[in-house]
Amino acid sequence: MNLRRALITWALLFVIAFANGALRELTYARRMSLLAAHQLSCFTGISALALAIWTVNRRWPFRSYGQAWRTGFLWMALTTGWEFVFGHFVMGHTWGRLLADYAIWQGRLWILVLISIVLLPPLVFRLDLHKRSTSGNMV
Image 1 (cartoon, rainbow, N blue to C red):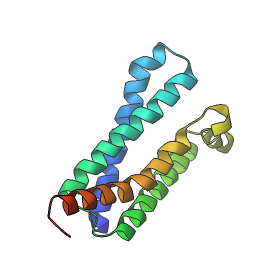
Image 2 (cartoon, rainbow, N blue to C red):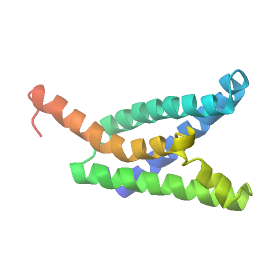
Image 3 (cartoon, one colour):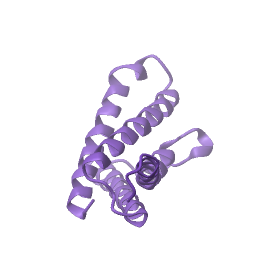
């Protein structure tokens, strides 16, 4: 996966994350506490992102384990940058409010989403490599 494809994929991941948030707000957030809805949304988001990364990797595979790691870190940096720039300068949230999503000791699980964004590309690469090696299609 080259840089252009990595950026296109990140845009797809962004759309998926946005849809996950909309689903949360329009459905189950009305029936549970905000914290519980946030936590559930983090896990549904990670699952959706994993499926998307796996699917995109079928079309545009990572060329190496290192490239998969670099892509994951790129996506995490883009996501974090977007969150803080958009959240602060467009939405008007304070830095404190934005940082509160990282308070895992208070049940906020956003950091797990960011960690998964980093870990999923190398995991998908390894799983795909293992699948190819066990099926007789050596890389």
